[in-house]
Length: 110
Image (cartoon, rainbow, N blue to C red; front, side, top):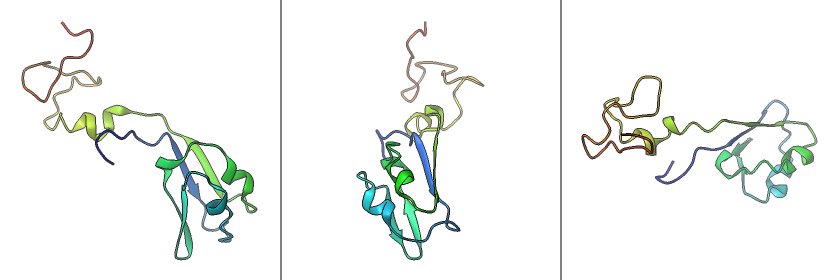
């Protein structure tokens, strides 16, 4: 994951027991989500936009797509500034906003 990126919104997977390696998912996906990796199909969920084209084209129903809630609190951009656990328990708010450069005030903080 790179700085400034967002967590993948969709998780896509290929069932290796169902997949017959026809590569239709590779040729039909306009976003480059799929690639052949030896005797399996590898996926890059970051590229997925949930157009469902791969699911519609798969003759064996081997592709599964599920939406993931985006939790920015676990994202490296947010946690990199909190190595010592400076967030209030159970929240995404600093327990001492502004005391040092790694913690920033959030909208609504006094």
